[in-house]
Length: 514
Image 1 (spheres, rainbow, N blue to C red):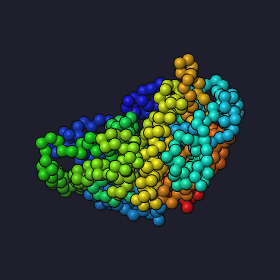
Image 2: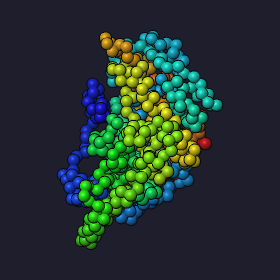
Image 3: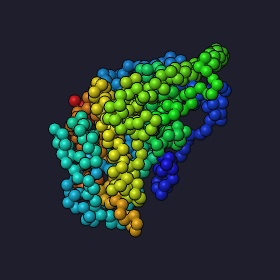
Image 4: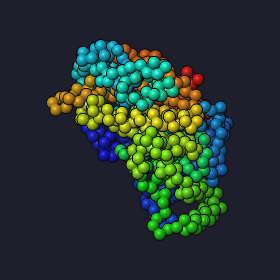
């Protein structure tokens, strides 16, 4: 089932509605260049009319951060602003709202009062999408224990990841201002709950460019629920008001690694070269006439696509990986799934990709069906994710990449301490409602202080009671790891110096780092 059907068209649709600003191009990507069409056309036709690389100035015109580039090389690498702990980010998004109370945030009091009516004081002032009346408290459905030298409390659902517990820092005091999926995901990944804003990966791509000029700086690896690069969800990895050169490039583990990368049938590489040379001449004539640097940028994007034809297939081809590596991830060549995407994330990290974003949908555990039940579908999701994520950490560590790769395991919000009511035939399924008031994510690598926890929720795991971490704080911290002051990384748009952390105060959480 596709994600837009699974997420946008189910019984929660009224809570998920978001305007879709994406519009279909008037010309198909394969028609733009005729027989030479392909990924270059896809990039070029989506290019922003004004790339504006030198627009990064404050209200007085003083440069805040020099991100000026030659328009012919929009992805040329730039050094970080400050000393950096991370050279790259692998961002693992668990779509649907992962239940922290059944995995990472052990609450003995919730165990003690399991099945009791939730106190009114706990509910006052709260807004839940689906809980009504007087709900009952629900303790963790799985046994917790302490693991590693740090003695961190974890449930038995992630036995492989548990082996890396001393490499992980749990942030147990994340909170969000949004309690429905689409705006919460937008906030988490773009810094704003409204569509049209650049994703975190696009900001990183804009700031740093790509080390490997034959691969994009930002790659999106979608799971089986999310595979259409023209879907409304594309704004989760889009460039917003940044030049479109910085948006995430969608890749897949089966078939063409990047859509429209291959030449059309009957078109050889030398013919593509002739087409690009002709386009370059036309663009040069346009530049001479109108002096618009965007024309050169388009040529640069075509050239990038041409170079990618040589390297991208190799990067996405795991056939030369040893069998023991495939077994470690649980990956099977030709099978497009989360395990394969985790292996690809390591391969892309080796090849200089700055920001790789992975998705795994299916954590929306309301208990309204078997697949959305904590006592069924949730267990399956844990099995899908546990081994590949543990393997990714092991693999990065073995290759010396974890020390400068920031791994972020995140979700848009948590789940409630109360059971979401279910009746009749559904009564056998257990579930929790959305909870933006307090939840857990974790980070590893790139100087992160492993074997630690930061912040905490209350005794029942519903609200943050110490060291709250807002989404903008998380973004500021990730940018800090990459060597940027979030105040300085801005882009002039609609008369404002826009930044991913917005206008409210944001802080770097220095306590997460060694």
